[in-house]
Image (cartoon, one colour):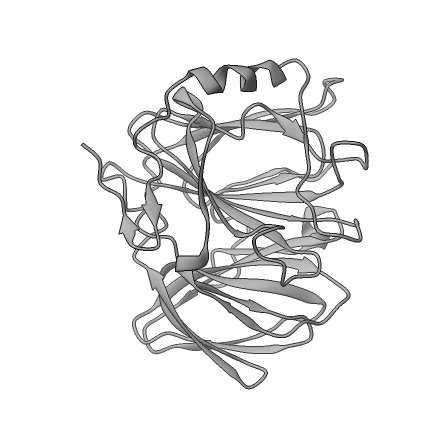
Length: 298
């Protein structure tokens, strides 16, 4: 089995922080690129047999594709605002330019249908507070089924976990077609804030767990800013943000099912935890962000 934890730098492609293809991951559908453009730079991306989202992590950009021009407002960091984004189809030549410089993610999925490009306004992105107590977290559902239907295979969302909290919990899986789950290959791309809670930094860390019921897979790793973790199968969770260091991750999922879905099954040993949440208070720090910016709390 290929290494599942790819520390920051392991997937570097020149000046770009991440280039992950399905072949490199050892699967079929899901990929991720993270590009870094200097001020005034223009980059041309050929999507090939992949559809993708153009998702700013920090900065703003202009996207030109198939005669469309999208002005992406972006954000300062992933901890300051819910961003707008663009969907770009397979077999496309995409021109991305930034006047001030940008770091952006391209969550990708190998697909069959070619759809039109489309802009996703930040104000239309639902922000969900999930869990309760120390398992309270923010889920930003910008590219999930039922919210964003303009995709063939690609599913994506963002998570912000306040420092000290747990997310991706209870542990869950989506590695077989059944009553409660579909098959999806999944990427976790982590950003960890430093002491100001806003600026990504390699100083902080979090923890991530992926395992199978039979013990054949049992990964418990410390993750830092810029790390990638691959989930080919098995239960995954929790992701734990160390005290003092809020955690962000981008989830990218795709699989063979004819209809997009993110359905999963909890680990039966821990599923009972959900039944406690209705009686527990939410962490008042969530939601952390909205399309209007960073939410302040007392």
